[in-house]
Image (cartoon, rainbow, N blue to C red; front, side):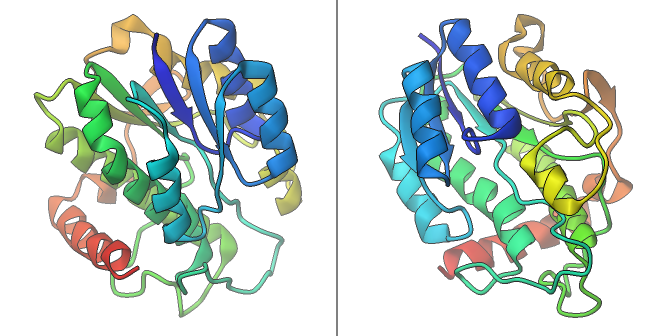
Length: 260
């Protein structure tokens, strides 16, 4: 039976994905931060539930260690949005800019820790939920200590996640583990969007179908290193394809996660 870990499964897209996969007979591991909502999803899907705050890299390590058995699919869906307009810069439990920590460092570290299990289960898939809203990432100011803006912080972190996905696909070539990323839909009716105080554009169902496709579609079993805008192959921001930038980002990332 295919075993899937979904982060951020207690709300929004992750919750909808958990229900859709459970209906298809997939075995699930669900992660969330809200204990009550997470318990409800686990009860309805028969999943193993692991509560963790991805703003702490120690919690990310605990999450990885708590996953039972092997793993066939990892969906890095959990994230933190733009925040309220004009909100001040926030830091993670480790002293890192919060959106960088949750939207990039956490999925980076979780993936690295779970790679041995994914390789054992190959063919396996990694799906990173990114965004079409990407911005240039400044390796010299990764914590946005200058000119902070929550929307820009979110978009820079998503660019980093896309660039990492491309690196990961190259690293995993020949292992049977694929790595892809996507913009599932635009401004779905989720808690993240509501807190930002911006209007909705796409339905949650639209985002669900885009993400579900990368998890279950047999036609994508060998597709790797791609960015999708909903269901369509698309081109990410140019910086994500810059090998020099990706090398510098990787070195920075390794130093940040190793230091905690």
